[in-house]
Image 1: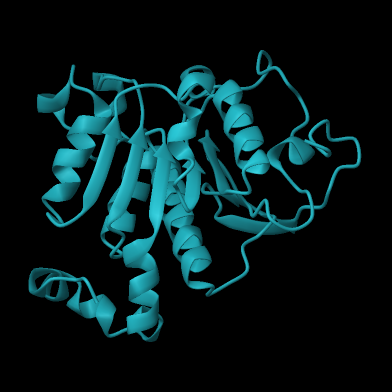
Image 2: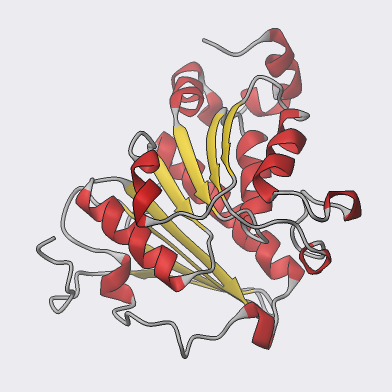
Length: 247
């Protein structure tokens, strides 16, 4: 087991849990997790993955930190304004566990650099950008990579894991629209800081559930309204009209 004495001390309360046995700890230790977007969802997601013993993380985000980010992007402070999100996040997370292996790309994910995702065991999309989400979805589908789509706006959360190994079910089956012109945005209708935080925590738990086979999260769309805390889990099926059916 490649956890240090320091890590055993840091995570001692978790190592007591039944799900964190030696076999499962090895799975978490080896898993390479890519996070696209280190905003309101990506920040708590990354924090709680590291706090759950994940050690191999890859970050993609070309944004620099702005004051308007601070209310919900909890890895950053006023001192970080003007710096790249990926670099600050890496620095902060290594203070929780200095033995983490974090690769930080201060760039947006595009067709030209998608291949950097190939070695990942699971790709988590918190980009809040429809073009990027559709790009990642198609890439993961074509390369049989696990893909988690996580989105939050106003008080509403949408999270879904697509396994991309068995029968065809993908983000495009669920949301076939190609353009995002009419989609609501956080900067126009707002977002609750707590909503973004809950989305990050639930996405982290779904990731751990998937890595450890605790629960089958495949093709289940989780919808959460944080204003009344209603939660719905909907099983997603193949859309026969999906343009990616034969890709």
